[in-house]
Image 1 (cartoon, rainbow, N blue to C red):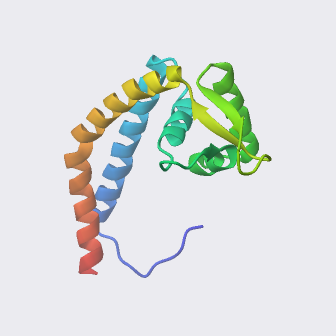
Image 2: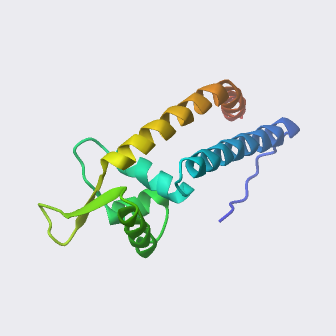
Length: 145
């Protein structure tokens, strides 16, 4: 839902927003291509990263994965099924709540994720100066209003 605002936007604001969206799209395109080159559909790569990046000591569940990926629980269940079939994830009963299933990465997924994460971090570091400048501009405009 778009909320109306009394705030007047400058041409520089529009340029910064457009540049931010363009830069984010460039990164998303890079990420999609990198995942596909590694033999992973982008959504599977995002799922593996979400599982690996879950808080230390906290097991990932299908419901949590759905939330992290902003997808419906039944879609997450299908995605996990594909990851299991591909040998990237295993599913285990939660020791605390047997109704829940927890997800663990396999050695195969750990290797793929390590390679993909390293190249993603390099790309982010390359893009960082541009992103920082855009965000500084947007932040400065907030402070000035």
